[in-house]
Length: 469
Image 1 (cartoon, rainbow, N blue to C red):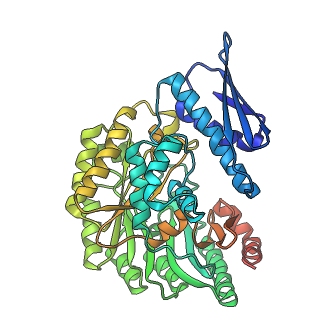
Image 2 (cartoon, rainbow, N blue to C red):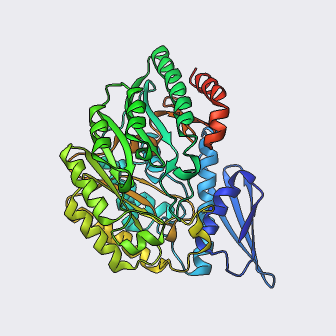
Image 3 (cartoon, rainbow, N blue to C red):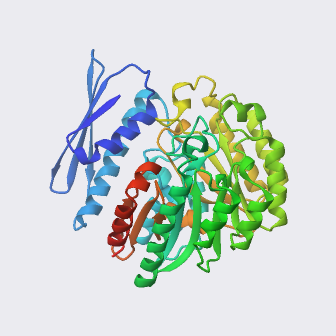
C-alpha cells in the first residue's frame, strides 16, 4: 500500500504508518494525502482508491500561532498522522499498540513535550492515549521508563565512546546488521585492529584537545569476544578512561572463556552481555546460533565469579516458538537473575534470511509474549528503563530493557534518548553530536564494511576530527 503526499516531507512517516496496518500480500489500493492552510486552520484530505471506488476523508486542525518553524512542522506531521490513523483504523477495524506513533524513541518524543512546557510529566500517559491513540499499557510503560531514567545529564562536554567489532562466529538468520562471519574475514582481523587502533589514538587526541569527558565506554558488534584473548587484550590496552560503566558485548556464549573474562576484568570492564535469545535448543539451531544451554549457563556462572553486571537478551517471536516456549525461557532467566534483561520483539528486516522464510513465525502469539515478559519481570523486581522501536517489528511492538537493584545501563539511555554525544570508532560505527541548548543533533557514519574501512582509514580519521571540531 503506497501513500503519496503533496507534502513530501511527511510522506515517509505516513508510509510507515500505512505499513503497520497492511501486509505486503494485501489487496493493493492507493492513498493520496493533500493539505491546505488558511490562517491557522489546516485542512487534511485523504483519498483512498481501490480501483472500483474512491472515498475522501477530510479533517480540520488548528495550529497555534507564533511557533518556531520546526515545531509547527512537527505538529502538522502529528495531525496528519492522527488523521490517517483514524481513517485506516476505521477501515481495517484494527488498533495499533502505539497508535499513530511511528518513531523509534517514544520516551524522547514525550520528554521533549514535557521540557517545552506543553504538558506535565504526570499526565504523559493520558496525553499518549488521548492525542496519539496509544494503548493504555504502552502509555503507562513510557511513563514508568521516564521515571526510571534518573541518570540523564545534558552536558555537551560529556561523550560516550562506542567501539564496533562487526564480526560474529556465525550469522543468525534474523540478523540484518552489517556483521561478518569470522570465517569470511579471519585474514582481515589483524589489519582491522591496526586501523581501529589508529582511529582510537586519533580520538584520544581529539578528546584531550576538546576537553571532553568520557562518561561510558561500550564495545559492541557483532560479537567482540570473537577476538582471541590476545587480540582482546591489545584492544582494551588502547582504552584507559576512568569510567564508572564499561560494557563489552560478549553475546555468544560459545565465544566466552575464563581467559577472556580475566582480561576484561583486568581492564576494568564491569558490564557484559551474555545473550541466550531463547533457551530452546532446537530454536537455537533453527536460527543458526551455534551455542548450547550448557555453554550459556557455564558462561554466566563464570561471569558471576568475576562480579560482572550481566545483561541477557530474549527475543519474542523466534521461528517455531509459541507462547509456552517463550514463557519457559523467561522463567529460566528469572532463575539466573541477571541484573539487566532486554526483551526484543522479532524484527523481520530486509537483508535478514528469515525475512524471506517466515512461515514458522507464530505472529499471533508475539503480543502475548511481550505482555507476559513485562508482567512477570516486574512482578519479580525488574523495572523498565529504556525502550526503542524498529521498522518491521512484529505487531508494531517494541524492545524494552529492564533492570534490578539500580543497575541501569547509562549508555543505553544516553543513546536511545539522544541526550549525549557518541564518538563511534570502527567499521559501521556512527558518531553523534548532541547540541542540547539548540535541541538538535548531527550524525557522521564510518564506512559500513571492514574492507572499505581498512582502505579508507585515513579518511575516517579526518572526518571524525572535522565532525567534532
